[in-house]
Amino acid sequence: MLESLPSCRADIEALIPHAGRMCLLERVIAFDDTRLHAQTDSHRAADNPLRRDGELSALHLCEYGAQAMAVHGGLLAARAGHAAPPGLLVSLRGVELLCKRIDDLAGPLDVYAEDVSDSGAGWQCSFRIEHAGELIANGRAAVLRRPEA
Image 1 (tube, helix red, strand yellow):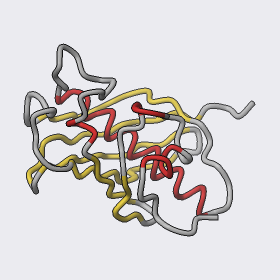
Image 2: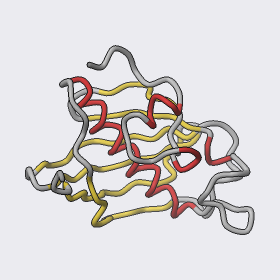
Image 3: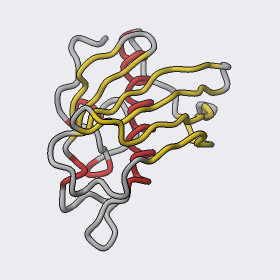
Image 4: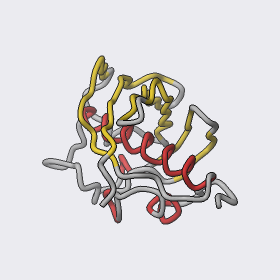
């Protein structure tokens, strides 16, 4: 049963399949039945696993949004007393990237996810990522639930 908001990467890793440096979100600020607000400074880490040639492309903000979806699902499941079913990201739509790279942004990223629909077989969420109060990316992602083994 969920007792408090995840306040560190280890707490978040317990909710999602991403581990180690691939777990990009560091803390949950708030969540409810349909929304999540998380924050992270991982975009500035020299050992961020998504960096290429020392830079981190804004394209990777889609992964930050998808991880926010996974954390939200994990929190809802934990609140209900069970683990979230595994999922597979199957599509991104309407993605807008409003910067070229993110490794040079000072301060944390605010990552938001909001449920759009749930068909039972999968679900769709919108995501929005801000830096210093400015929108830097948004879009929608669809996840297909994997059958449990």
